Amino acid sequence: MPYQEQAQAVLEEWRRVELQLEAAEPGSDEAEILEADARQLRDQYQDLIDEAITAHQPEPPPFPDE
Image (cartoon, rainbow, N blue to C red):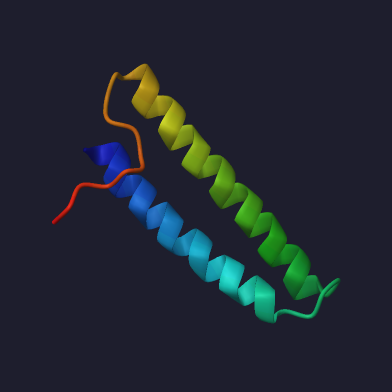
C-alpha cells in the first residue's frame, strides 16, 4: 500500500500547512507562500490517487486500520 502511506504523509503535511495558513496574516508574503505550498500538496495528493488508479492499487483514502 505504498500510495496510501505516501498519501498519509502528504495529508499530514497539508494539514500542518493549512493550520499555519489560518494563523498567517491574509495577503502577507507568508500567506502567499503557504497558499502555494497547500496547492502543491493538494496536487501531489491527487497525483498519488491517479497513480494508484493507474497501477490498479488501493487508492488513498481510506487508510487501513492499524
